[in-house]
Image (cartoon, rainbow, N blue to C red):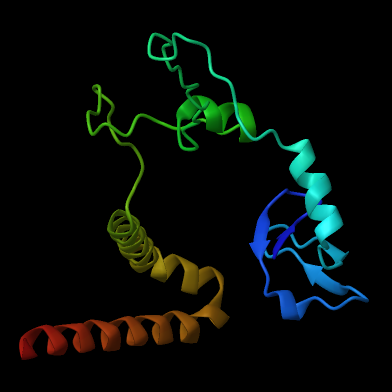
Length: 165
């Protein structure tokens, strides 16, 4: 027996024994629609056969008729135009040609180098002005001495690591 979905018109082959006289609740595997399917009797089959013509008449010049198929409006979901229209995204040219574009901005290592140079420059300025600062602010002497001890320890640690490799 063929069961037909009322929603999407998909047809399913169901064994005759699965559908009882009281009907059975069936669900379309395609769209999820549920309905009660009743068994098809001989009377209903005759009604269906009357509605369907047995012979379909074709025109005499069937061979001359040109078959035209409509092309589906296939959309490229990744095209620049579609993404711009649908989501408002603008995509840069990914063709590999740079078109004389210069990449600007610093990388991670450039930031590390600039930060290191900045810290070394601050320590040098502090070393030059150390006597003046201690003379005007005597309580900062211990802090400045501790700072330079820590810098010396870090320097020795780095040199020891470099000498091992």
